[in-house]
Image 1: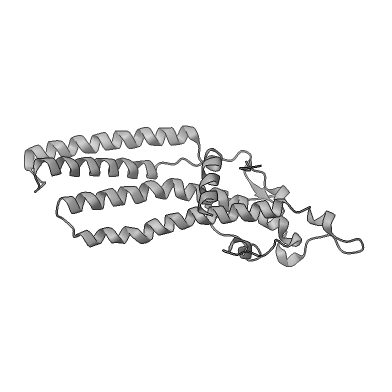
Image 2: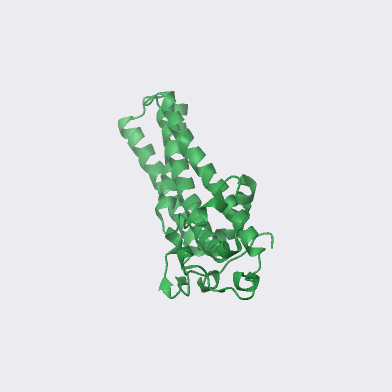
Length: 233
């Protein structure tokens, strides 16, 4: 699932993240890193705030400068604006804030999911598309944040300001990031399984009500107007 999730992240990056905005954010991050480095070099030369040797001081300044650049990058807006805005049954939704799915879809995101019920097909297609976009944005933003925090902690440890065990605090955060990638893979697995099924109306036996059950929600995948690239299709 981790490998599939990483493949989906790369394939869907340009769909969720504006390339122009991300390039601008990169330039802002580089500028912030350079400014931070200049400020720290000047203040170190005048006040000698670092209590380490010259070589370690250079390492500390470089680490803190890169951390500043990553933090500035993460703070910039880079989400791809949707045009037209995504809607479900005429109601506008915010796919950039979707981080969960409805109850009927959750079983298909488990480690060992059941076969997709034909009645849940449309719900799975809708929810996994929204969830996928949210996860890609999360990874793009929180990845640099995690890197910035880790580099700042390493710089502080190098300078003797914090003990080494503080670095262990970043282990659960790193595991959480990896779990996001794994969740992205599970969402794609569920989407592919649902896409392989025929539409529920066509699969409904004659003489039965072809409308979806009301307890499963009225949303349909065809009503979500957003560009969807399917990796591997």
